[in-house]
Length: 259
Image (cartoon, rainbow, N blue to C red; front, side, top):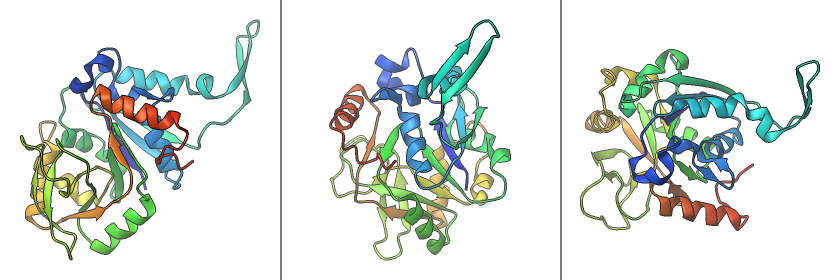
């Protein structure tokens, strides 16, 4: 099952960092948050990644082009113009980097990588959040629900897309993106970490299609399920978010570190 990661937004709320690099390249513990997300998926055996690039996407291309230099010991034979990797701790990843347009909306980016996914279910997430969600359990839940899509429902405070949730059926009844007023802590919100069927592509008209519109259409036909996750989840939307994640990492017991 392929893993699609959104990595093309402008990250305006984190402008202190994103003025010089895309948000997925902002570092936690010396490595980009994108790397942390990929390591988490890889720990469950998912190693085929499709990264949707946009704003400053060449930074992400350069990161993977120079990956050996960052994570391995190397020997340069200057006379022969040769580089030898002495120790190889590189992950077994296949990484497809796709330019999906600088101003393309989230769902539009997903539509642009349809040809790389094929007619099969896939995993899908944002490039700015980490969690200790069990991906295998999430997939098993999705298969049981038999809906077009499943998102991971979490309960952090404020400023995220909220929805009402049928207790027994785990089906989402309504979806509202980022309400103006803070909501009650007990409200479930969209934490990303989706599982989707290829039928979702039929709901995306083009580059201008917003992901919220697709989620609304799925809820109206009862085709969007919610996998309740009571464990750790944290996105990196602002500079304080980044500081929180780095402090957690520095303590040496980051919940999302499952590798």
